[in-house]
Every structure is written in structure tokens, then in C-alpha cells.
Length: 105
Length: 484
Image: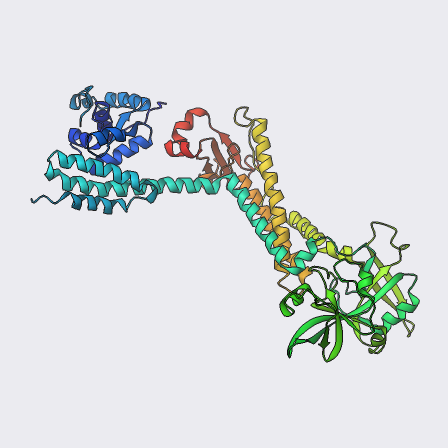
């Protein structure tokens, strides 16, 4: 019996977007085309299930740039394993969101 | 579409935040506000209303998720063995607290204030020893004073009377007064009563409650003269709380002089309290004696001399008797076996089995005081406390033992959590071909419990089925992993 949770296509898409470097809620929305009312609840559940984790950026950076600090997300080790299983299940994921190393705002 | 100012959207986010439970509200609002600020900066104004609308969806979603998690936590809290024990302990402490507030119950639980309480006896006519009543005439008391010196070293007579006490400045209160022979206090040998030298007139001892209520706890009250039904009495002092353990309610004690006692009618009925001769009280296990007295008409009257110590123990003797009766009646209300738990070296180690039995023993140890104190509390509300205590103890003990067994049977033998999700399996009409009953699950995934609907020779009691670790991913989702 596999240990990875089986994700819906939407959840897998969001996980893939975060993995690809779209680390803020709005950038995930922009990349996936999903509305905020779908993206944020999904990200919260992914975080609850330990597939992603969130962190507030340092206050000093935000203050220096005269903007409010943002909460960013990154994929955990369990999330990576789940994403790999999801990519096998949904092969188009990789084509929809290619892997990049750049953080997208 | 005209672009609205940013503060309008910020206000909308603030409104949405009120949907979110307060613990999460601050962080939730902070994230949405930060994102909104960045969107506004990107000049994609047409996307802002939709983005803010999504905030409401997210707020409702978060609230629902937290509620679902809360209900799982509540269920886990309710079914936890610790919660069960805490509940029993709290109930026990509450019933003990109530018992200490009720004078009759408190007296049963505190040590006797009388020195050598075993030799101090209350004499009652045969057949009335369970509910002491004023059944001895003053004439009989006088007769015993002269003839029963071989049985009693000292005797005192008292009656409970309602008397009006004038507390001064025209104020008067009606009290339940123990009108007693002058030797009552010295006979009791109690530190709870003031020692007063013999006076010419009657002496009055006030109870602590009366002294505080009607005499404002005056520390110099001793020596004051008050009027009791128009007759003068000198206050000898104040008795300590719980000093009176003999039959009858007492708010004050009027210790009469011999002359005044002699003036009372021979037919006056009251109680007799006596010190039994040390020779008769040599056997330490004996605390009740029977006395026969020849009457003038040639007949013989029987009297029971029951020690005060025996009377103090009586509620607990009744409790034990009624509890024993409840234990005997228990098999008629529920089956006694706790079920079959096949040996499993990993999930049923000695430590786990010990823990299971310790939990069962702890429940029993906590239930008994709860039943004892609660039955004493209830019995105090009725006149015939002994009969009521017997009935209430029996009913409560029976219900408590039954619950204890049923609760133990419905718990997982590994984690002791209550089993959940009962499912009926099989058909009663096929009882002899396949099993028919209820199946319950341990939510953590330790196993299943099969409870037969009809006990048969091949399935007489409930059986536990252990599950191995490969099942855990089904039974232990993330929520359960957090609470276990």
C-alpha cells in the first residue's frame, strides 16, 4: 500500500506550481489560472497534510522595500514524493508548468 | 468598471476575517492584505474584486476545516480514558464537597468527638434502634439511675423541645433545644462542649451557628443571662460545630438542675444516653448490647444499647450491604465477561494488559466513593435516611457497575479510546449460518470489535480482531495523527 496521498488534479496543479517556483498565493493563481477562492483553501489543506510549508519573509526585507511582508510556500520532502506520484498520474502537469529555478512574484 | 479605492477592499477583507475563528484570524488577514497590496501594485485592478471575493470563500473554507478538526478533537477528548477518570474524580470531589456541606453526612464522615465513643450508648426501646425516637420515659430513666448501676456507670436524659429564646432588645427566636439532665456534657466527655461549673440555675450552651447568627459571635457571651420561654438561663458557652452526634436536631442545650428535672412529669418521653460499665465493654468487637428490664406488671421490656461509634459507622455499613446486593444483581442487567482478546505479542504486551486492568481498577476505585457520597447526599433530603440510603446506594451502584463493564467492553484494548462507528453486520435470520452482530472500530487502527447480536455456543461473547501496521494508513489520516 503506497504511503503517498492521492491528490486531485487541482491540488496536484497547485503543488506543481509551488514546486516550480511560484511561491506566493497570487503567483500560483496567475500560473494555474485558478481563482483565489480555490487556490488559498487548497494551499491550506496541502500545508495541513504536510505537503507544503509556509513561512513569513523577514520583516526587515519587507521594511527595506517599503511593503508588507508576504507569506511564501515551499514543497516539503513528503510533498515532493507526492508530486512525483501525481506527475505519473497526471503526465500533463509537467508540460503545463515546466520546472524553473526562479521565484515568481 | 471604476476602480474602487484600496481601503474599500481592505475593509472587505476585514469583514471576511470575522468569518475566520479568532485564533487564526490575525495571520489569515495579514496574508490576504499583503497579497492584495502586491496585486494593487501590479496594476491588475480588474482582478482585485474577484481576488477579494475569493477571500470570503477561503474564510468559510478555513472555518469549516477548523470546525471539522475541532469535532474530531472533541470526540477524541470525550473518548479518552483520561477524560473518563477526570470526570469520575470530579464527580467524586463534588459529591464529597456536598457531603461536607450537609450536617448529617459530615457527622458520619468525621471522627467522633466523644472520648471512648464505643462505651457511650444510646438506649432505645426494642424495634426502634434503627430510627432512634424519644421512646424512654423519665420514670424509666429515674428507675435505671437507681437500679442499673451494674450496667451503666452514668446516665443522662434529654428531650428535644422547641423553645423561644429572647436574645435581647425584645428579639426572640424559636430554637430546637436539647433539654437535658445536668450531667449530659460531663457524660459525653467531649472537647466540643464548654466545661462549666455547676450553677444554681439552668445553664444554656449555644450551638456555633446560633451564636454567630443571633449573638453576632460575641466572644464574651459566657455568663450572660437570657430568657428561654420566660425562664432565666445562664449561657455557659458555645459548642463547637459538629459536637453533637446524638439523635435529634440541636441548636442549643439547656442543662437543667436536679431540682428542675425532678419537677418534670414521669411520663415525659425522651432519649437516654449512658456510659456502659467497662466490664461489659471489654470485648473490642462488641458495640451493641441488649438489656431486659422487668416491668411493674410482671412483663419484661427489651432495650437496645447501641454505641455512638456503631451509629456513626452505620451509613458505611449500609453502603457496603447495598453495594454487595448490587453486585449480586449485576449479572441480571448485563453480561459479566469483558470479551475475548486473543494474545498478540506486539499489541497486547504485559504492560498494555496491566494498563487496561489498572484503568478498570481506577474506575472502580473512583466510582465507589462517588456512589457512597452521592447516596449519603440524597438520603439527607429525606426523613428516613437509612431506607433511602439503602435504595439509592443499590440503584446507583447497580447502574455504576453496569456502566463500568459496558464502558470497558467498548474500549480499544491497546489505546483505551472508545470504539466508534458501529456497523450492524449480518442478518438475524441467518444467525446459525453466519455471524450476526455489531462491528466497532478503533479510530487509530488497532483493530475491530465484533459483538454478537445473539450469544451462541460458537460466538458467546465479543471478540477483538487486531489489525497490523499495514492498515494504519487507512485508519490514521493526518488529523488523527495529530491527536494521537
